[in-house]
Length: 310
Ligand code: NAD
Image 1 (cartoon, protein in one colour):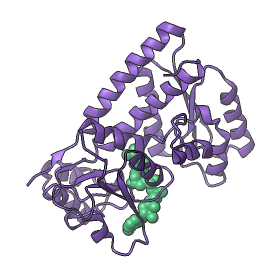
Image 2 (cartoon, protein in one colour; image 1 turned 45 degrees about the vertical axis):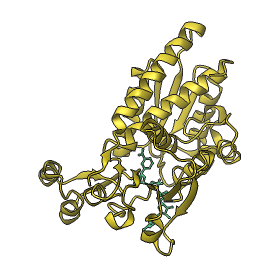
Image 3 (cartoon, protein in one colour; image 1 turned 180 degrees about the vertical axis):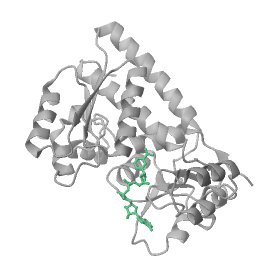
C-alpha cells in the first residue's frame, strides 16, 4: 500500500486566496489594509528565512507588512519599548516577536507584553486560556490551526476518532490537543517520558508528530491506514542519517549528498508511506500552512479591531 500524500502547499494556497479576498473586501468597506509587524532580534539565519517568508506572503495578500529588526544585544527595556510602541500603533493589527530570542531575553516576558488582541502567534496566556475554555474570541497558534485546516481540507473525520499527538510543547502539542478535543476526537498526548511510544502511536487513527527528532516515527508506530501528520522541521547534515531518512527518494538523496544538508520531518517518510493511509511530506506539508494561518489570524485581528465581526 502507498499512502495518499497530503499536499500542504495546495491547501495553503487555498487559505491564502480566501485571505486575500477577505482582505480586499475589508479594504473596500473600511479603506484599511490589515497590518502585520514582525520583530526580529539578532541575525539567526533560520529566523531570517522565516521572517522574510512571513513578510513577503503578507505583502502578496495585500497586507501592510513591516519588519522591525533589532540588534542581538538589544536591551530588555529597549525591546519592551519597541513592543509597546507597536501595541499602541493603530495601523498594526497583528504583531509577533520571532523566536528564539537571544539568551539574555525572556521569551515569556515578551509573549506577555504583546497585547492579546494583536497576538497573532496566539502565545499570550489570555489566548491560551481562551483556547482551553473553548471560547471562540481568542487567537490560536498557527501551526496547530494549520494541522486542522489540512485535515478539514482532505475531509478526514475527527469525531469519535483516536488522535495521538507526540510532543507537548506550548506552541504545537498543547494547543492542538484542545483543537482536536473541540472536534470531538479522543486525544492522547505523548512526550519524552511516555513508556511505550510505539504501542501508543499504533492506536491512532490520526497520528501527529511534533517532536523535533528526525525520523522518530517509523513504520512500526503506525496502524495500517492511519493518517500521519508530520509537524517536524529538522535540518540534517549527517550522511548516514540522510541515507536512512531519504530511503526511496532517490532525487532528494542525490541533492542531499551534493549539498550536505537537507530538511526532514519527525516521520520516517519512506517507511510510513507504506503503512499509513495518508501522510504529509516535509517540506511541503504543515510548514506552508503555518504562514497562511498567520495571515488569517492577522486578518481576523484587523476585522475585530475595526469593529467588524469577521
Ligand atoms: P519542543 O522542543 O518545544 O517540544 C518537543 C516535544 O517533543 C516535547 O514535548 C518533548 O517531550 C517531546 N519529545 C522529545 N523527544 C521525544 C521522544 N524521543 N519521544 C517522544 N516525545 C519526545 O518542539 P516544538 O517547538 O513543538 O517543535 C517540534 C518540531 O516541530 C520541531 O521539529 C520544529 O522545528 C517543528 N515545528 C514546525 C512548525 C511548522 O511550521 N511546521 C512550527 C513549529 C515547530
